[in-house]
Length: 292
Ligand code: ADP
Ligand code: MG
Image: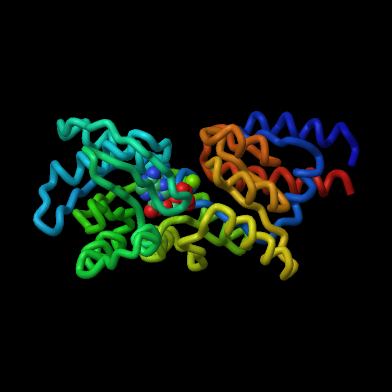
C-alpha cells in the first residue's frame, strides 16, 4: 500500500467520525463479508431504564426494588445503573450490601440486611438451584417486548422480577438497512436472553442471532465463522467485548464505549453510531481500489 493513500483515507475517515488504527485494518475491512454486532451499547443506546418491578411470593414492590438496587450499587454494569437510578427516582432508600460478588454473564450476589440476595438471569437461578416456576412465564411476556428481565432472589426463593428496557439507537435501523444492502451477513450477539434478543433483532430486520452468550463465547463464535472461511468484523462497546474485537479480522469499537474495547479495535466510531460502519466500508473499498 502506498502511504499517501492510506494517510488520505485516515484523514478522510477522521472527518467522517471513523478513526482508523492502521493500513492493515483498512485493507482487512475491505475483505470483510460478515458483521457481528453486540446488542447492548452497540445496536442499542446502552442506557437501559427500569420499566417494571413485579413482586412475587408475598413481597412488595418497594422491598424488591430496595433489595435489587442495594446489591447493584456494587456493580458497574449498565443494568445495575438502571436499577439504582430507578430506585432513586422512585424514592426507595438503599441499604449497604456486603459480600458482593459479580457472576459474569449471569448477575450479582451478596448480603443485604443480613439476608442472602441474588439478582440476575435464568442462568443465575440455575446456578443457585432455584426453579423459576410461573414467574418465568411473566418474565417471557416482558422479554417478548424486548425487555431484559432479572430475577430477584431472597433467601433462596424468587421474590420478584425487575425489568429494564434499552432503546435502539436512532441511527441503527437505517445503518443496518444500508449494511444489508451492501451484502453483509449480519449477526447479533448478546449475553441477553434469546427471547429478548429475538424481539430486538426482529425490529431491526436481523434474522441471525447468538443469544445467552458469555463474553468468552463471542470470541469463539467469531473463530468458528473464520473457520468456515468468513472474514468477520465485530462491533462492540464493552470491556467484555475486547477479546472478540481482538479475535475478529477487524474490531470496531464505539467511541462512547470502554477504553479497552477501543484499544482492541482497528476502527473506532467516534459517536458510536453504526452509520460509521457504512462510511468505513465505502472508504476501505475506495482506498483499496486506488492502491491496486
Ligand atoms: P451483554 O452486554 O451482551 O448484555 P453481559 O455478559 O454483560 O452481556 O450480561 C449478560 C446478562 O447477564 C445480562 O443480560 C443479565 O441478565 C446478566 N447480568 C450481568 N450483569 C448483571 C448485573 N450487574 N445485574 C443483573 N444482571 C446481570
Ligand atoms: Mg455491550
